[in-house]
Image 1 (cartoon, rainbow, N blue to C red):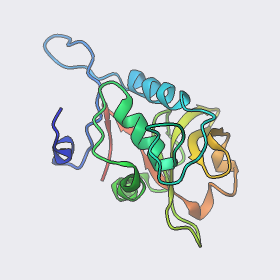
Image 2: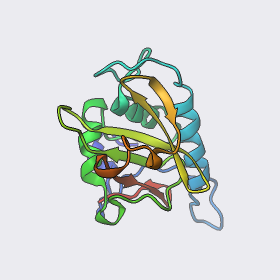
Image 3: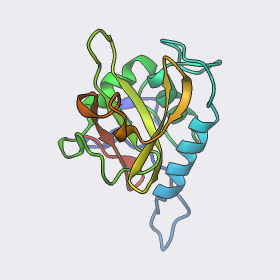
Length: 178
């Protein structure tokens, strides 16, 4: 793993947060399901911790982008090129046009990106926690509840509509980006 954050972005703009499994017939196999589960499990380990603006979860609590960064930095095999304050803005720039407003075909571990609302300085980010019968649950750190799971976010007027910007899905072991 390189110390240079730019080395983890390939020439197509994909961020390499990959987990490699044992080689099969001389090739590296990437197990997206294992990656997704590790991301969800790591984020669940912070459930109930308080929201702390500008904090990156190195101690107890943090904000939404701090949670994303902490999970990506502390999940085996993932190299995160971001740090807490940059994550929200940086991730919004990485949402591919085809994934803007994407609500179908999301899976646990995908990153959800939200626009800032009037009067807010920053947007919001979270991970897909679970998808059941088309209903998407998000694990995130919110100002009112700290690290929590919000159920069925696209049936919640606060998270859907113009606030929802798009998703960064995991494809072949990498976060697919612009």
